[in-house]
Image (cartoon, rainbow, N blue to C red; front, side, top):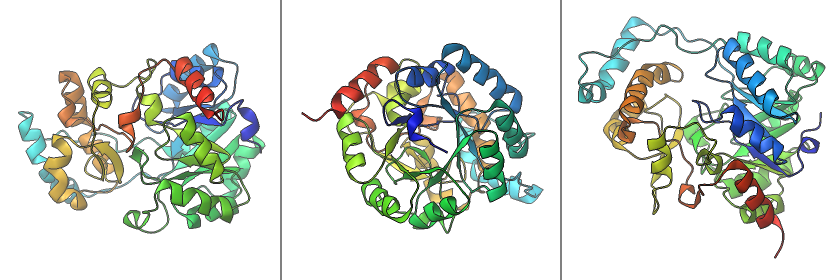
Length: 345
């Protein structure tokens, strides 16, 4: 199935879980000729249906739904207690006597998948793992194009083998979670501009470039390196329509060098964020925290408390390495600017 023909311009807004991708943001990108994306990973099927309804009220253009491919974990009580102990410096700093244990570790991917099939968006993308060929076939039968997220050439070949229509090649510069699913996450170290041409040369399906792309000039460079389109996350995080916390947005736009690093302290999976008190506090023990989604669920209450008090030092400030070049514009203004910059001078 064709993905590129769904866009007037080769620009996909990165799916960013946690509330950043408001219906207004998703629809705004699609209305401007790109492909807007809703991150469905942390949403219940009912919430996904509700937000898709809101998007469809704002645009009649194609958009994308994104999901984490995962099975529900079953950590032991001892594992949970050990993980809570590792987080003690954080919850004690917040004045808590204990860490609340969540009732649910993650959403049911199987239920999300069935909701996806019923909703029939133009495109669905996936990360953290890979679908089976039969799952891809079910999506194709429903008229949904399939995009896999990859961090290595081997992962791109695996997605091509199960029938994906395109792959997002995500370099280490990208903000938020890494999509590595073959081999150790620590081994997927290719920067974006090294990864893109290698993936484009290895697979016959289109390569979508991600990581460190902030301007139309960057888009031109990605296309010259073999990509057929780009996926941009951090650039859209600071738009007017983004749903992130005001303190988070202020941090992204505070100017100067914003040191980011890959950390698994927040969620148990490597993800790039702006350094803050949380990442520094947990740095020494982050290799010991449980894998996603257990750690992610355990830190949810901590991050919610930080949001309630407006304190970015305890928030997960997901951002790519080029956050210093992010521009505070409306979605329409950003898309117009990117398209203008893409034109050769």
